[in-house]
Every structure is written in structure tokens, then in C-alpha cells.
Amino acid sequence: MSRRLDLVCPAGTPASLRAAVDAGGDAVYLGFRDETNARNFPGLNFSRDELKEGIAYAHERGAKVFVAVNTYPRAGNLGPWRQAVDDAARLKADAVILADIGLADYAARTHPQLGRHLSVQASASNPAAIGFYRRELGVRRVVLPRVLTIEEIAALNAAIEVETEVFVFGGLCVMAEGRCTLSSYATPCSPNREGVCSPAAHVRYVEKGDATVTKLGDFTLNVVQGGERAAYPTTCKGRYRVAGAERYLFEEPASLSAMHMLPELAAAGVTALKIEGRQRGRAYVAQVVAAFRRAVDAVAAGAPLPAEELAAITEGGKQTTGAYRRSWQ
Amino acid sequence: MSAARPALLSLGPVLFPWPAKAWRDFYFRIADEADVDCVHLGEVVCFKRAGLHAQMMEAVGERLARAGKEVVLSSLALIMNEAELDSVRTLAAKDGALIEANDMAAAALLAGRPHAIGPYVNVYNEGTLAYLAGRGAVRACLPFELPETSLAALAAASPVELEVQVFGRVPLALSARCYAARARDRSKDDCRIVCREDGDGLAVDTLDGAAFLAVNGTQTLSSTCANLAAEVGRLLAMGIRRLRLSPHAIDMVAVAEVFRAVADGRLETAEADARLAALANGMAFSNGFFHGAEGAAFIGEAE
Image 1 (tube, each protein chain N blue to C red):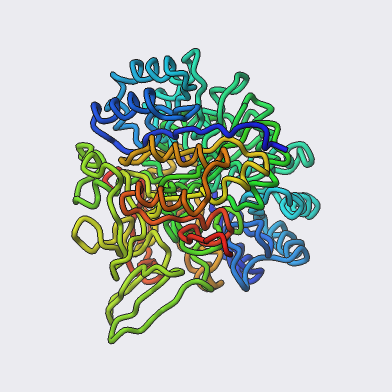
Image 2: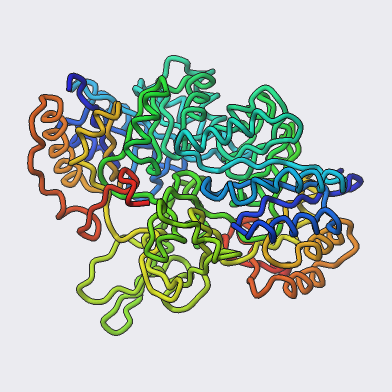
């Protein structure tokens, strides 16, 4: 394999940014500390000054910085989103990651030199949609939604003229991203509009005997017995009563891990690999990025994948390759 | 400002894999009896179901058109492979009926000629709406989760006609994975369209027995039925005059009568809610999204 896959790493804080760059990330992605990005959680994200310093740190070490402005701007108040794009351009970010068509149009007209990536939140999963974003809005990379098999990704890459980036590790959205309102059905907050899925302020843990009941808003998402491991309570990782049985209907509490699929992803024509986890600490980021650095380099050198032990840090201790394998569907 | 212009009622596409005859008879009755202006046809959720009604599509469309209804063809909402994309290409190549794009693939293929934007395309703000209008969109059914403040801002700025779903379970999510199959320990490839057993969706209850969601193949819906009868006046006042009813296996002709009467100002909200409750086959109501609350909430007029 001649071309080396790019490793795009999460940075929820300046410390994580440095950890990701030091561990060998080719790029980091991050967001501003407000509703303009899809990880709008307390204690996370970057001020303008922190972004400026982060970009300097990354660029000095040959890494890129992508700024996610990937929620959908609120009608009647486009200002904060446009400001986020303006500031990313002013501070010389390498690209903005956008989901909204109107905002992408604004970015293309206002900052034509600023790189534009299409966020996974735009849910573009076919050549016609992706071709639209390339032709009309100058998007040069698309982060693919986690709904495609590896065969579908290969066929897609053969049919489009932009780079693709795929998730390889971390939390797994099982729904088409940016088109899921399960969290806003149970809470007054919206992933698409405010960047918050299953916000902690609406999560409750209720002890009941030796079981813990997890709730999102008024709805019980799970009842977990003593030693059982469970995922953070998002609606799609809950256990429900359906067709006469209790089950994890949408997905088991498992994390995405596609490290062993890197050779297949490279063969499918993917350009970049995305690691999830902007809400994670710098130690986690350092560990995962370093492991993927070794794996990507091995694949590029035509060497066998190194044995990596990431199971201990996956959610619920279980791993899945999600939609990449057809059997998952 | 818009009070003088009558509301337009539309019937969204049937989201469920009803047996072909039941599906046809439903639309024939709508053609003959329902006081709706516009009727959507087409498979929005799952490509594997598209064949269920294909044979009858033309006859149903003609019957509706003869009855004076505008017929709109709704496209698939999540397109993941070449076969699915081909079905959208075929749809987009049709002359005549207006086509509703439920994925940017369809919007891209329809660019340059009049088309509708469906609720599965994320039109959250006036920038996106203006952009799509500039490429030929002549109407847009807005995303289900938008609150009143966003709807009003969009209506104030909109170059095109806007539509809002006012009745029916709310589509909340789409997936590559089929949950109707999974609930029966089957894979999607071997689903044998088992979702046909769930004519109005498969109930998903919490472990403590509360109704929560409903699964419709790869789609997840609310267990509650959106009911914006009390909000119709505010929608019309802000300039949104297209009101969408999403079909269920209940008396949709009667549901349309209720909304027509509400839109015409002939029926009080409390009476409308009571009539709809009698029609809704046990579905609880919700209107939380409109009010900026959790979507599952039902907020009364006294709020």
C-alpha cells in the first residue's frame, strides 16, 4: 500500500490536542465552546485564544487542525455559526467541518480559501448527494455516516471525486447522523440544533435494590444489575421491551473498533480515519492515537497489524465494527 | 396576514408496509372521501418495500388526480447503495408529478426544476432554505423537531411555501439496521419484510412498561402521535399554510375533517382534541417539539 491513511484525532481540550499531536495524529478536530459544534458539553471545547495556540502547536509539528461547526444554525440567528466559520478562517484553521448547506454556502462565498469538509452530521451517503456538496459547495472531504458497509464505501469511493473519512474507533451512532432526534424526543435539548445528545443534566441514575435504573428525561433506558457493564445512557443504547422480550433493540453497549479493518479500509479508497472521543481525557486520547499511529504505519509499510489491546477502554467492554459488516444490519 | 388564504391539507406518504390491497383501498377512499388537497405516494423508509405497491402506484395516482388531489411522489430518505440511488434517478426522471426529495441525492438530481423538499432533509434555517429555493425547491416540509420560534423565523423569511406535520407519529431516526428484523432475531438481508406484521409500527416500551417508541423497519418513530390541532392557528398566523397529516391505520378521512374544521375556524381546540383522541386508537398525543420542550410532551393550551 503506497498511500498512508490520515489519522484524524479528537481534541476536547487544549491538553487533548497536545496529546493527540504528540502521539502522532495527522490532524485534530475540535470545536468552539458553544452550540455551534456537536459536542457542546460542559468543560469541553476551545476559546478563540485556545484555538490560536492549538493551531500554532499543531502546525509547528506538522499536524492540521479542523474546526467542527457542525450543528444546524438556528433560524433567525445565524450569527454565532457564521462567526465560528469566520474565526476558524481568521485563525488559519486548515478546514471547517460543516453540516448545514446554508452555512457551507456562506463559508464558500466568504472564505473560499478555507478548506471545507462535510460533517458526518450531514448524512451524505451516496454519490449524488456527495457530488452535490463537491460541485456546489466546494467540499473536498466527506465524513461518511456510519450506515455503510465496507463494500458500499468502496463503491462510493469509486464514484466520487472527494476524499472520504470514516470512523474507526469510539462511540457508535447507530442511526444516520444528523437525522436522529431520539434525544430531543426525551429531553428539551437537540443534538442537531444545540450539539447535545443525551445531555448529562437530563440523565438520572436511580438505585433500586441492587439494580441501577438509568433514565433520560422521563424515560427509563435501562435497568442494570450490580456487576453488569452498561453504556452511557443514550436512547439508542437502551434496553427495551419489544415483541415480548427485553433486549438491546438498537445496539448493545459496545464501542466501534475497526482497527483490524484498516487494510480493507485502505483498499476501499478511504483517505482518513477518524477517532471519536472529544469528551475523553488526554490519557485516553494519547493511548488510542498512539495505537492507531502504529497500526496505520504498519499498514502503509505492508507489515502485519500490531497486536493492540484497546478492549479495556471501550464502552461496556465490547467492540463492534458496526455497519461496516453487512451482518450487523 | 394569511388568514384570508385557506390552509392546504396534505396527506404524507404511508410510512408502513401495508398489504397492497389495503394500501390501494386506503388511497382510493382518500380520493373519494377525504377533504385533503395533496396526497404523497412512495416508499420513504426501506428500499426493500418499494415493490410492495409498485404495481398499484399508477392506478392510485390517477384516481387521486381525477379526484382533484395534487399527487406528490416522495423519495427514499436514506440512500446507501447504487440500487437505491437508481430508484431515485428513475423517480427524478419522471415527468408530471411534483417530487419530494427526502435525501440530498434527490434534491441534487432534481436541481433546476420545481421540486419539494421533504422533512428528512435538514432545513433548519433561512440560509439553507434560500439556497435550496434557488435551485428549484418550491415548497419544503420542515424537520419534525423545529420549535415555534424557528418555524416563525423560517416562515418570515421563506421564498417558498412551507409545510409542517400536524398529525401522526413523529419519525425520529433512520438506520442502516432493520429493527423489525432484529426484534425477531433476523438480519436485514433475511428480513422477509417481517415489518409487514407491524401495520402501524412495532411498540418499543421501556423496562418499566411505559410506551416510548415504535419501530418501522429501519425507521424509529415516536410512540406518541403528534397533534398540533391547538397550534394550527399559530402556524397559519405565522404564514405556514400547508398542514401535513401522516397516515395511520385509523380513519384518516375523519382526521382530515377535524383538521379542516380547525383550520377553517369552525372547531374549537378542545373539541378537536376530543375527536382526535376518539380516532387515534389509543395513541397518546404530543406537541413538545413545537413548544421547545421534549418532543414527547403534550402541552395544553393553558401553558
